[in-house]
Length: 324
Ligand code: COA
Image (tube, rainbow, N blue to C red; front, side):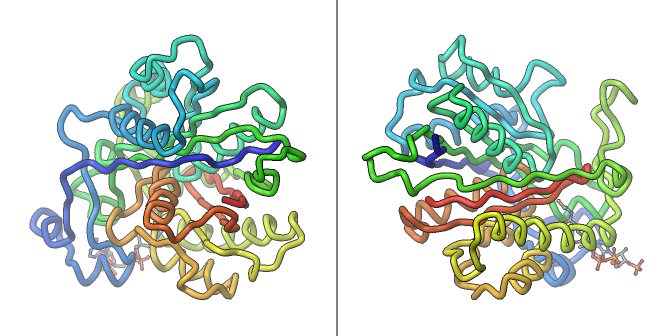
């Protein structure tokens, strides 16, 4: 069995927040943020708008694009580090709104690598024959865990959601899809680096939600190294050269981190999907948001080879190589 992408969708909260607006509340500037990160704008969820709302909207769009009724799903996996509540899983809230009681639904927590982890989990359910139609969502409201007085972090992140629908196809099937789908997934973590990127709260430690804390320079250095290594691993596992990649869909944390990966792969910049300037870092939502944009505007076409990668707190990192 192969996990074939049959639809995707996304949702961004209506309110956008520019660098110039941010500069009115913290000591920063558009020039500094653009030069160091490539970010110009981010979206911020409205009061009362929850991660599950963003996720639900992206899911509905993905199901419509797939031409699939929610009742055909047999698994929901939702990646988030900003769940509505400590429990239940945000995936179950989305499930209830989709009206598909009974099927398994759970969250995956790997911060910015969450969507890559969730895709790997879904792919393994499909390959094991335990699911046929899977909804995979990445959704975040990082605006709720930012210290809006800390200019070193609050300028970097935004809110959003993206979703894909995967369908099991027999690799020897006659639907013309045998060559499509996820080729391989590659996941890593190294918990020794907890203090470089974490939230200083939680139900078991402080009893509060806490705020995101980061040692930016160290995170940058690790991100560049880990991403270079995992994209190499994904290509090697499939006996492919970087030339085989039609589209790189990277985690949109920072333009300069993406530039390093592009340089390592020697990819022409036209093959890279970029949304970081407009969305900032939306954590687990960033890869599916970028994917959805390039599929919707016709850049990614059926049969294209796409390489997705991400790195996040933990540290966690990973890559998925797939044929769209
Ligand atoms: N506006 C203006 N100045 C700022 C600022 C801001 N928003 N944030 C930090 N600065 C200042 C610092 O205080 C420091 O000032 P000082 O020299 O007077 O002490 C100066 O800018 C340089 O700070 P530094 O942290 O060394 O900058 P940097 O070049 O490392 O860039 C990041 C900072 C955060 C942009 C960069 O480290 C980075 O992108 N890291 C990766 C972050 C990331 O992507 N995390 C998520 C991964 S999933």
